[in-house]
Amino acid sequence: MSNSRTDRKKPLHTRSAGVRPLLLQAAGLTLSGLLAEPPDGPPRATVVAVHGGGMRAGYFDGQAHADLSLLTLGARLGFTVLALDRPGYGRSASQVPAGLTLDEQSAVLPAALDAYAERHAVGEGFLVLAHSYGGKLALTAAAHHPDWLALDISGLGHRYNIEPGALPRIRRHMHWERTWGPLELYPPGTFRAAEALVAPMPVREAAEVTRWPAMFEELAPRIGIPLRLTFAEHEAWWLHEEPDIAELASRLTGAPALRIEHQPDAGHNISLGWAARCYHLRALAFFEEFLPSGAKATATQRPGLVAASP
Image (tube, rainbow, N blue to C red; front, top):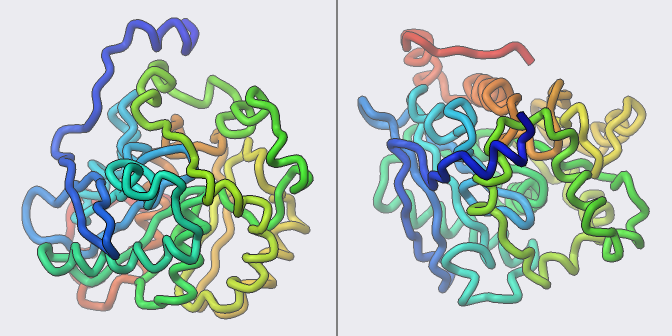
């Protein structure tokens, strides 16, 4: 049965069990988001999930299959997972309908995490998992606020696999193909469920798309925390062949640990595809390596912790 036919029949849910909405006040904005906390005690650390362009925080709580949700998986493994709608999305869209630049967003994100930490236990600190345009924000913020424990990014490179001048003119169906890839990479019901996740990209955000290669060159040497980058097998937005990866790695000279990996059987939207659980487990395993020693000692005693090999 095709995805499209199944989509029409599948009930549409908005959140997984144990996931709840929340609001945070930060830098004069009201940010919306989703929160999942460990069911049996305080968190070992807090994973902050940052969505890409044209999506919302629910990207990390995919509803087409029970294995997709980063929020529920992370909570079961002892992490709090906080997925935020970036400025210009969700509740803040009415406050800044044109959105904010990356520099402006990079001031809001740490303020939001400070606001969260004032009212919630965060465990050993913040671990940031970001996708696509959210990865741009995460790198920008990490260059200015290098106090996160580690950073994991999917769907982001340093050179587009399309001429930058063509980006504003790219046809809608090509955009769809680049963003999703082959339909069989996603569970039936994905595109019906995604209707609740999709949002317009704010114009100020969209205006910076072509600037990213130059922005990356300036930011890359300033990234001073452990970093993992994942490219989907069917990634079409970014160059990610071996020479491209070597060039990308050569720019990230300040990262104390750097992993660049490929995820088989995945398209750009990894966290909504069949590969989501594998990718999320690999990201959480990467985070395990950079928890402070006390948390590591606790982690070795936790039953049921699954780590996929990079």
